[in-house]
Length: 294
Ligand SMILES: [Zn+2]
Image 1 (spheres, rainbow, N blue to C red):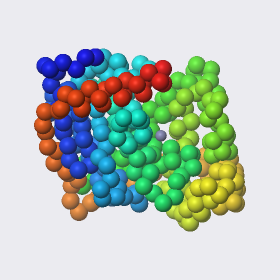
Image 2 (spheres, rainbow, N blue to C red):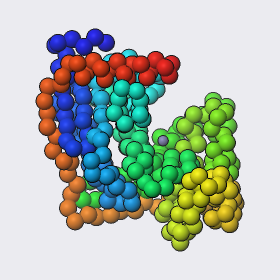
Image 3 (cartoon, rainbow, N blue to C red):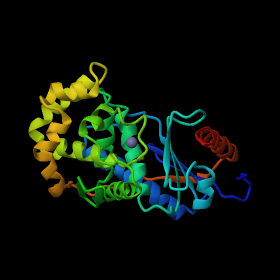
């Protein structure tokens, strides 16, 4: 897509996000403010903090799904995130203003949790990193009310779909934790439901295991393989934990509601015309990344 003088690219920015977009201002504002409220909400309920002075996240919002697909590598992608891609800021989120996919916000929030997690002292093993990103990304914010722990319906639908296509989808929890299945797994995102379940169970179902979980995460960070760390911290394998009460937990997953003192509001965004050179440089860097993936 050529960047012509008449395509009205704009910048919307606050200290945390910088959005480049060619959609109308109202829609761009709606999307970026939603992400900004999530930034506030997730820091209220999870023990994670963006350091002051952290670089703003770049959010590129294309007006149409057609334009977006010129900058993505598969039809079924609703939005994506680039981490440390050449020529782009540390974190770049790319999405269409109106996607074909209803869960585009789930994806963006999920990716945003990964960004926040980069600032933690302990780097999580993959099963927990993905699991907690799933748990937190399904947060619902209505004014001062936050609900967290909701079921990832799309993940279970993906799982059911993969199963109908003859793929093996439900894995042993030992494989989920060890991470061994990733290199040769064809079932795509099917096992995200299992990452989610394990993180949910340990966070909300078993607060009594909090210290064991913390120890497990510390041990996994460079000292032990994730499966050994799990066994060492909990005194059982993940599959044994599943066979215990986690299997029942799945059928009655609790959600938690928090009421804050005041409603969450987005930090105001300034709107201005984008610099054409910046738009061109950004789009070609995204293009270069996408072509490498194809
Ligand atoms: Zn992820």
